[in-house]
Length: 356
Image (tube, rainbow, N blue to C red; front, side, top):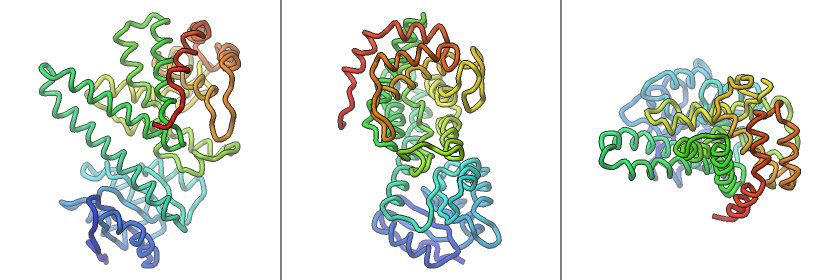
């Protein structure tokens, strides 16, 4: 049974799926001031609502339910052509890393642990609704503008680039960045690509696509992504999923630029010696875009302040790049990057962290 269209406010619709009335009341109390709310007390009703003519924009899904549990509901939704793009946030008392990994493998966008915190629930819901809007806008742009490509190519390209930049910055805001990381990192990639002999047009494409490298962080839980101390092996396993998650978020597109962004998201943590992730590629098995992005990403991470560390000096960071030549990094690219110190410093000075 369901109270279905229980109460309606706002523009976006959230479907809450839970077999416990008290849990439903808590989530409704959090969401109703801001969103329209639908309620289902079992998986089968949830599927019916999601497959209706007016599906929800996002689903908060309990895991432990009689009959059909949340994992099965999630699997069926992700298999459906009409429902696979609906963001699913598991809401459960099960907080083991293995449970979270299973949820992400099934296609869930996030994981909320009971008892829930109202500010966290609202922040996560708004984040994933924003990501959904980005994806829908992106799909609309690609579909609509393709027919006008010959006469409106410049307008399309500018709009596409802005969406890409915002996708990249959306991930940065998850771990309290100002967005400058993606600006610096993308310009390091551009600089290094040119020095490595890549053509101007291809280097420009790399610079535009590189900000999407960490878009998969959108799906990493806050208690892991924002942890100030050392991660456990189980927590790091969750972190490693952001590469595949980013690839999946961008998806297969008709745009070469977006496909390049997906490739960078997938491969920027691969290492030259084969010890990277997610596919343990070796040497030139790693696409050039991934090898270039690895250097730019690591250098900027080292020279930036993070919750768990102070910033490194330019020379210390370049020293590490040099030491990791042939291990983490492509030997030729690493050597070229170390030789670009003046240009690197100029980029750092131009794109300093500030509130934007």
